[in-house]
Length: 618
Image: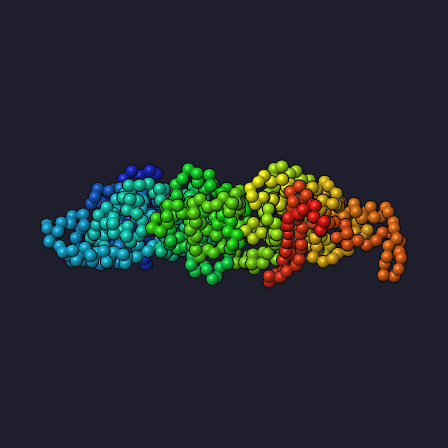
């Protein structure tokens, strides 16, 4: 750390200084640099010399041998020294014995008083002069600059000076006014409470209206507020603020880090990453506090991965809007009820979740209905570039959308892509459940020609009686080579065709010639990726077995040209039944598959539930 000798203006390198003064100011033209201070004749001719001379004069008068000034005490020609200085600056201001805050645009007042010595009766000063300071002080540029935020918070003792170097008060005497100007709580300014007791979102909000000359400095000037460190990479632009948020995310489980919003994004940005692009988007967080609850501790766990931010939490599933809500376990003190928490809206994509409706924060109950909650680990993309919007907007193209049509008075149905523990499936690892969008009841296929999905149909009795129906398995995907969609329903994958059904949008005719196609792709499926259609190894088995039986039993059959011999052509409804029936439970299940456009291509699978009476002759 380079320190300026207050007697002769020479620079001295001190490893662990014990007592020194430090200057806080706004930069202007003609500042004295590290190289300039080595030649006092030239340095004294620059516009910034007066600040250095006055700082050294004040420091010497108060008994300080050394002072530190950022303009001339950092060798900016050395990137290593500059990086060390920026990462250490909060600590340097905190360790300073006194900090002089020079307000170059605060005009001197001939009747100026020092509020530390103020006494109405002794000085006879009218209240009007106090009001004038309260009116002029917020206009100072010092309160709008990024770097001066940490210079306000870190030092214990700050003396404020106007343009004429007249002291106008201290951090203690002006505490209420400083808090009102900056929104930093007075108990933080006066160090009555540790800084980390303020949630991350609230600390970010203090910089919401501040500016820096370099975009990167808007992130670098906040390092000390979160006690994190990172290398300086000037030229990276907004990436610096994303890196800051990543660094904060690795050091805390405070989910108010994601409690930002930007009303300007409502009509212009359909999707956003979970990280903000600037501190300005945290402006709403100035009254935010964390919701402290032991039951929430585990739900606030998140980490940074190479695919995004990984959360171990519950998602609120909003089926009416087709979206997910991520609880942030924080609230606004001036608006939120204690039983409420702020949340952000997420949308699911084939490559993870993204934020949508980034122009607003949502308010939700702390204890919503568990039936609306989605447990597990989720990945949220940190950044969503504009180039990715078109693909995200069409993420439901060629998707499989499921709806339930029920005429049953006894049964209800729940769809899930999670494998129940009591079901053991062959090659189930080859099916990726992450493509299932629960809020929209869809399988996103990403237009992959060999996509396959698997759903578990879990039946529940309306009268809460014990369930006697084994969950059914519903496979869907595309059948090669022309991405022919299918949906196949199975009650037991090891059983015969009488316990399965198949639906396709068109009346496809299966012939013995299809066996060659099935066998060909079945060989490939053994070394396929996890997206290869399981239809070829499950529903394909059923169809193949039926066709082989027909090959082995030639018969005469009627054709358009008369009588012919050999295996006949069979429609799918001749091979597989149209519905599955469970006599013991009185339930009948069938499926229908049709292609619709909304405005993109969607394969709509309707699951039909009906009450079934085995004694009914119909």
